[in-house]
Length: 119
Image (cartoon, rainbow, N blue to C red):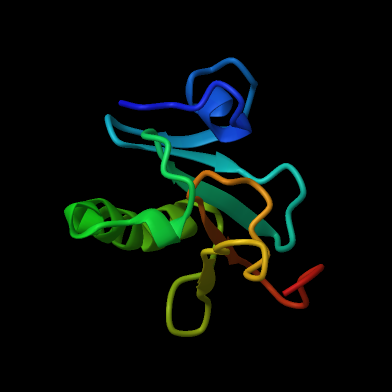
């Protein structure tokens, strides 16, 4: 697994920076956002350093599929109300114009009763 020693999310995955972990397996790490926009706001990140969605290849299809199928389960476990009355939002910011601030692929999962702080 590759990592970037200057990447804050790599440091979180490695346990060098504390986080409020909600999920971990061999490929993924999930943790609550430190500045949540919604009542439920966590991120799923690959343990392998991938700078953004723009660097994904066909070899990453299973990883992204895993993230997208895990998000609904974790959203409900974290406190989102179930579909269809409840729900959640999945956001992947990519690049400067896409609003990406940390250059390690991360998938935001946000939900809970509205109104939200942002978004």
